[in-house]
Length: 224
Figure 1 (cartoon, rainbow, N blue to C red):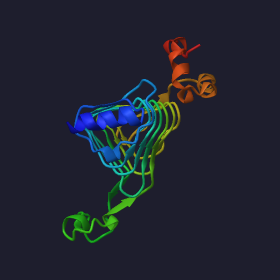
Figure 2 (cartoon, rainbow, N blue to C red):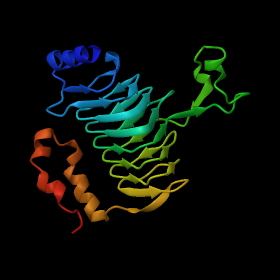
Figure 3 (cartoon, helix red, strand yellow):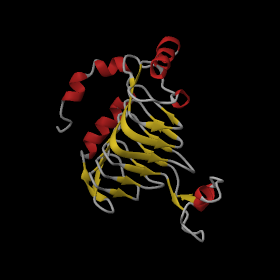
């Protein structure tokens, strides 16, 4: 019944096409008008997340300040996004696989104990239990393979690919493929001329109507 009421409110009064397949608190849902692409949430939990249109999230956990762009797909199980001191920003058209961990902060090992003693013993939820190297920013059209870990302070450039099982502890350039533990540069997806062609197109900013009318663009190889 609760799911039906939440869906009715969003569809009737906010113009948002919302498809909830699990119990999700109303307060965390901040989607834009769907333009025909519903926000799909399946067996996932959140507490402070903003959504773009067309996002699909299944069997994942999102904690803290997290911003999702348009058409972001996060498919678990086992996928966790956690932000305590800063935020996690994910651009448009990103794909995140199973069992991925994106951690903006980590335990403060400079304290006498690296255990979360403030939260678990003193019950004060002290942020002194945590430290951070900064926000995590994942730009548009990034694909993160299953079982990967993205660590605090990392920026991943547009169009990059993170191979399955990678641990990323440094910035990744646009259109680069990285893999390994720790992740290292493997190669670029395209040459400089092809990258310039994509950058000039700015396709990730196109509105829904232009996307729908650009099937030929997306079905063609970039390689000349």
